[in-house]
Length: 124
Image 1: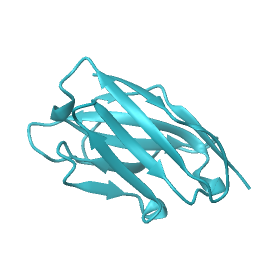
Image 2 (image 1 turned 135 degrees about the vertical axis):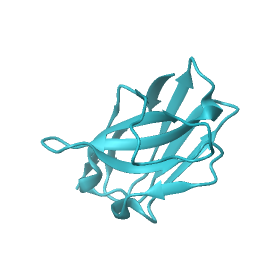
Image 3 (image 1 turned 90 degrees about the vertical axis):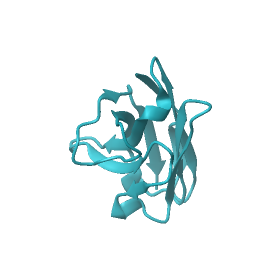
Image 4 (image 1 turned 45 degrees about the vertical axis):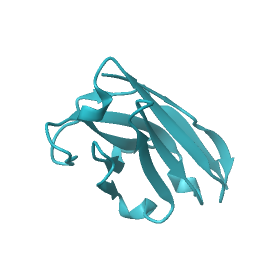
């Protein structure tokens, strides 16, 4: 499956952005989806994940209560609504897909496909 992110940009502290990740070339509903980010000079880190149906969602502690992951299987798209943004959220955000025969998403299994990333910059 091919993934293309969009929606990044420059926003002030406290602002909001909504990232989108459009999938093609596969059966989107068969994939758990995740969002990751990588800040300059840092390793890529997990941000959020959602199971095939959307019934299970995970967040890294630093974004709980501020970010919301969702998906629309009819539109082959996963979203990341980011609210109350902080300068430490500045990073390139990547979406990733994990094929699964079950309605789960695991952080212990590699994700199969990755997008090219979209830059999010939060100014202080």
